Amino acid sequence: MLLENRVALVTGAGSGIGRAVALAYAREGCHVLLLGRRVGFLEESYDRILEEGGRASIVPLDLETDLGRVPELVATIHRRHGRLDILVNNAAQLGDMVPLESFRPPIWEMVLRVNLTAPYFLTRELLPLLRQSPSASVINVISGVAMHGRAYWGAYAASKAALLNLTQTWSAELCESSVRINAVNPGGTATAMRARAFPGEDPAELPTPESIVPVFLYLASDHSRLRRGENLEAREWCHWRP
Ligand code: NDP
Figure 1: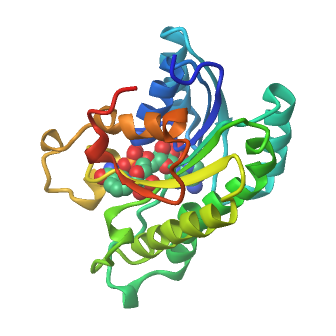
Figure 2 (figure 1 turned 30 degrees about the horizontal axis):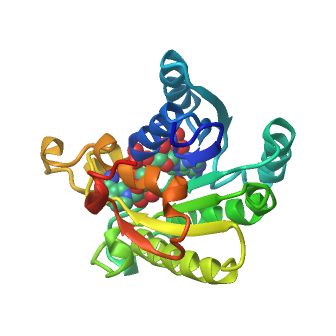
Figure 3 (figure 1 turned 90 degrees about the vertical axis):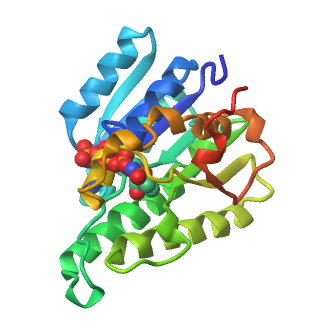
C-alpha cells in the first residue's frame, strides 16, 4: 500500500475534503488521527475507516479555542506512535461574506485563528515528531482566493493568502530537512462550505471531495519527495495513480 504504516493527522476530518482524504489515507495503510470539533462527525469517519479494516483515532479539538491543548496532543502522538509522517492542515472557517468595512471583528479574529494561526501552531508544535519520520509531508489547504483577493471574501481570502505565504517561508527554512511543506488548492468542490459560499450553485455539477483526493495521496507519498513550497491545483491531479 502507498502509505503503509504511516501516521497522518488530518484536521477537519469529520466532513467534506478532510473526510475524503482521511478515508483515502486509511485505505492506503495509514493510521489516521481525525481532528475536528464535532465528535459525531468524527465518529462517522472513524466508523467508516474501521468498517473498511483501517486504523484511526479521534482527536476532538477546537482549533479556535483549544490550541493550548496541542502540547498534550503532541505528547500523546509521541507516546503512541513515536513520530508523525503526514499533517494535513485542512480545517477552515469561511466567516462572514460581507464588505471589509462591515466585517465583525470577532469573526475576523476567529477566521484568522482557525485558518492561519492554527496551521502555523500545529505545524510548529508537531515539527519534532515530523522530524522523526524518514520522509514527512505537511499539506496546507488553500483556495483560489489566496492568489487574488475577491470582494466579500475578506478574512477567508486574507487567511488563505497568508497560509500560502507561510507554506513558502517554512519550506525555505526547512530546505535541508526531511520535512517538506506544500499547498493544495482544491478548486470548487461539493462540500458544506462551498454550499454556504455559493448557495445558488448545483453541487451535482462540482467535483466531489473523493475525486480530488489523488493530489493528497501524491503529496503524502514518497513520489512527491522532491516537491517543496509548491502550490498544486487538485483538479490537475485527479487522474494521478502511483
Ligand atoms: P467543510 O465545511 O466540509 O470542512 C471544514 C472542516 O473544518 C470541518 O470538518 C470542520 O469540522 C473543520 N473546522 C472548522 N472550524 C474548526 C475549528 N474551530 N476547529 C476544528 N475544526 C474546525 O469544508 P471543505 O471540506 O470544503 O473545506 C476543507 C478545506 O478546503 C478548507 O481549508 C477550505 O478552505 C478548502 N477549500 C474548499 C473549497 C471548496 O470548494 N469546498 C475550495 C477551496 C478551498 P467541525 O465543524 O466539526 O469543527
